[in-house]
Figure 1 (spheres, rainbow, N blue to C red):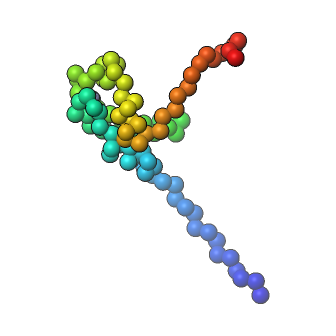
Figure 2: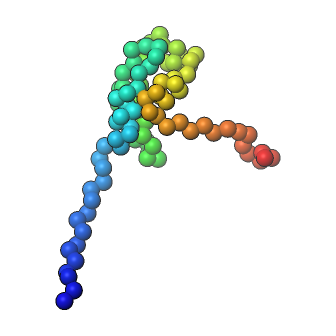
Figure 3: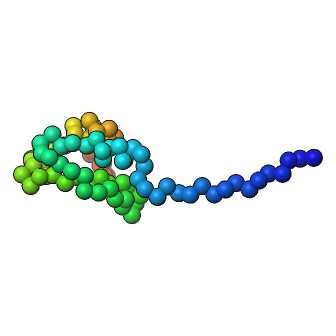
Length: 90
Ligand SMILES: [Zn+2]
């Protein structure tokens, strides 16, 4: 006699950010100011964003310097897209 299969319980969708995003937010430190994480939000496209609050005088906030090295140090995955794009691009 074949075994009866129990119906699978539905797995609830995760409600918060993935572990990697939370870990990134915990580990991020701006090397130019006393930054703080102001929140983690998900945009309408499903992309998570860690909102970093920099000091008013921080060169990263002003756009003078990049914080790529701080993001990489925090475990962020960076993607670099290079051009040229559009018609005629090879
Ligand atoms: Zn900063």
